[in-house]
Image 1 (cartoon, helix red, strand yellow):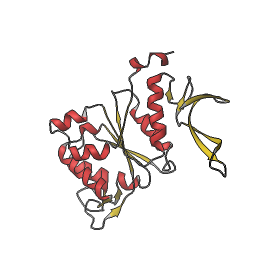
Image 2: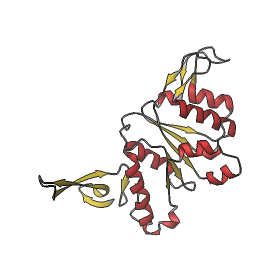
Image 3: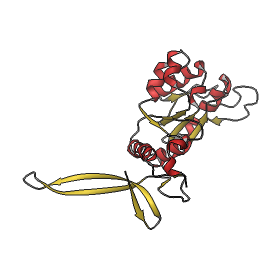
Image 4: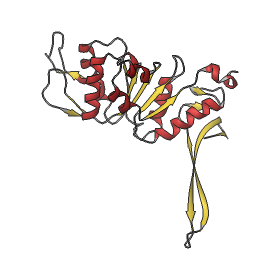
Length: 228
C-alpha cells in the first residue's frame, strides 16, 4: 500500500506486482497494477477514511487485501474508530459493490423483532402484518451484510444467526418456502469476543465463522501523526 500523488490529491493505492517471463522462463518484465482504496485519502479531503500514519496504513492495507475476497471479516475497535466506514470500504472494494450493503444493529433486538428484521414476514403472519415484508438478508442478496455491535447479540439470537449463515437460506416469518441468500458478512464489535466465548456469553462456533479475517481499527490516540 502506497500514497500516490494524483490530480485529486494524495490517495492510498494498493499496488500489485505481476512478473512476466520470456520464452526461456527468465524474468523479463513486471506489470504494476494500481487500485485506489475506496473512501480513503492521505490528506484532509472529502474522503471519510483520512490518514497516513503507520497504524492507519496497516489497517488500510488489510482492508484493501480482504476487499477483493468473499471472506467474512470481523472489525475490532473502540467506539468511534470508524468500523462502519471500514465495512463500507470493504464492500466498495469487493465484486459485490454494485449491490447493497445492508446493516443490522444487533443491540437491543428482541427475539420477535430479530426474526422479522432478518427474515421478513408474510402478510397476516402476526397482528399488524398487513403486507409481506422483505427481510434484511433477502434485501442484501449478492451484496454485503454488516452486523454492527455484534457483541450485544443475545445467545438465543446468536444460534438463529449461525444457522442462517450455515444454511444460506431463510424462511420468512409465517412463510413455508425457503429462500436462498448469498451475502458476504462483515461484523463489528468493541467487545473482546474471545473473552466472551470463555465466559460462555458468545457462541464459539459463531465467533469462528465470522472471524475468518479480523482487522483492528486503531484509536486516534495511536495515530498522533494523523491529527492536523
